[in-house]
Length: 213
Image (tube, rainbow, N blue to C red; front, side):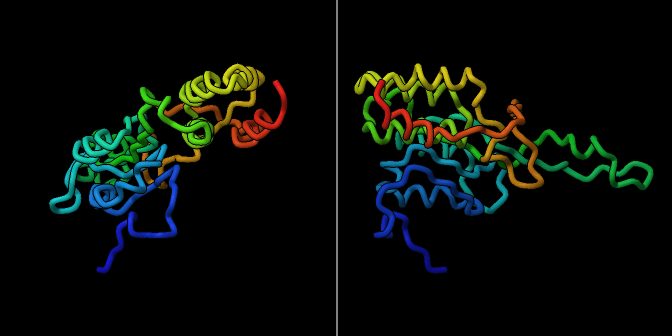
């Protein structure tokens, strides 16, 4: 099969968010996308804990590479597993929680963020986008707040304080848009509020930047 490296696609200039699931070939894609990765803020990638494809890299391999590229593991958005062998009791294949309770994780969607220890290295525009992604995609309100605090130190806009005030007014988002695919069990802990967001951080930041303090 003919493939093309991400770095060789001229139309891809500056990437903020990468979501990838290529059946065990994720590491090979990353290894050939140094330019694309250099500007990315959030990566959501499928990883495996058990070899499901012959010779494929494991979670530890992907984790080592992405950490070396300037990312930190942040959270799992979902994970999946199977029983070692379907359990049948008295001829009944559907034994409910026995098969559903398989504890061996096989794969998961892992979320990596640009290393939050070095947020000062990001531009103002990237910091704002970082906060948006953490808020809208991961519901990581504390990390969104941290990015806004760094941005405030440069601009004096008071965005972090206003963001906290809006969260306190009950406008925090609800279910995780990066929820696991059908058939996957949510990672633990994965409890999120059930109500939908009243507004995304994109619109909030637009208002924050367009109005005087």
